[in-house]
Image (tube, rainbow, N blue to C red; front, side, top):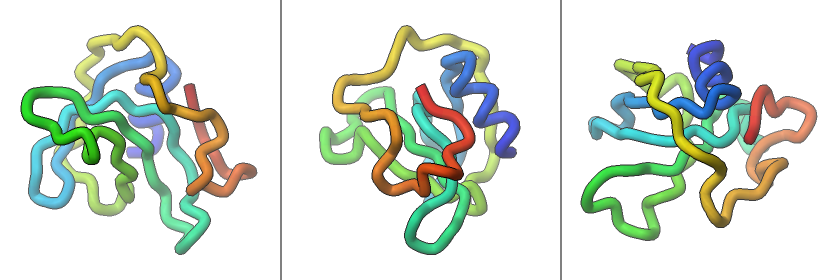
Length: 98
């Protein structure tokens, strides 16, 4: 799974997956190890209809992601508000980032 996510970040590909029982379409921006807990995570920007502003940015634990698909559809660039070196991830263990 991490390989699919890292490749999607490097190629700026949109991903779809199920997380928390909800089907999500996202632009992945960073993947790495969470400072608190040490779990592998991905920082994503959710796209689609009816996404509340406070839920546009999500941090998902890879172990809780199912039905992951790389759509191979590209997105242009990092979204406003994204900062390289995600503050919630251990800097030495960021696998990929925009």
